[in-house]
Length: 162
Image 1 (cartoon, one colour):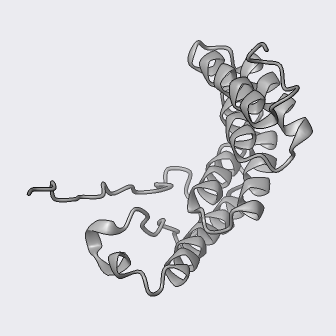
Image 2 (spheres, rainbow, N blue to C red):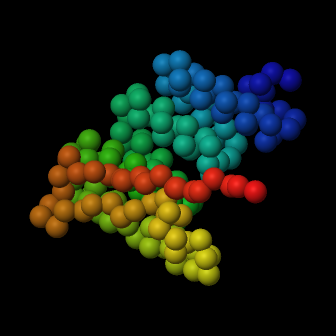
Image 3 (tube, rainbow, N blue to C red):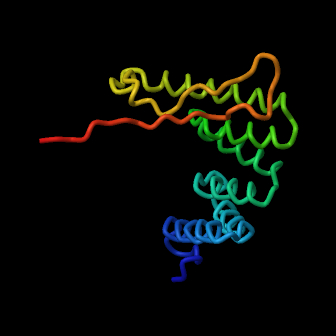
């Protein structure tokens, strides 16, 4: 079976197609990567890997309207992931749709809160070093294209010792 053949074992076939798409993207062929992503998405419209690869390829192709649609699809499937709202916000900012971008940033902040609520009872959650997402700045004076979209903080863990 070829790596791009999706017959037979669908998961393995989809994985192979997406791996090929990721390679094409790294080699500077976002059109080929988008074809791979769309091929998987045609069989499974909710496939996380296909939607993420498609978003990256569309970004490189400059098709920001489609990036917004992909980001909205991803965030509807995975509402606890603030990164999808941040992707939407950045694309909207680039398109000059600043009020919509501001709203997407606010939804990213809400996703952080939802994640926190979902993690209630997880003792590691309260540890400052266990947090991977932080609030996104949203200017009250109006959106600014130069606003930071996200601030990542490394998860610091002490090395395991015997």
